[in-house]
Image (tube, rainbow, N blue to C red; front, side):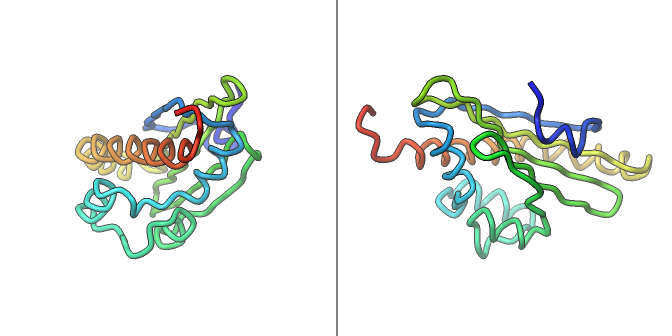
Length: 157
């Protein structure tokens, strides 16, 4: 399986992957993910505030702008990739949508980090040690929000 994120960052030092099965078609999951509003999650707001990150507008597209992330590319209903460069560190994230059947999709999100210097890798390893569990909670919560939104108003729930 080829991921679009591999085009941008095939080699990396750190990564984290989370998945969730959602009772909705890939198209619905894809569209809901692109318009996700993180402000609907108390956990995400608190975790972002603890990290000193902006919480003014937590709709995905606005959040990306506030965080200096770039929406790089998408394969419609399959994957989209986001990136940021912070000093000597490259961060790429994706959402990937695997159709299980016509009304069930596995959604995964991966974060990949590449440190461009030994110094940045050393300092990032310390940061990652402490932040990885919180980052994981944030990703899991994003997927929970996505599931809730995508499955909303479905008759077979």
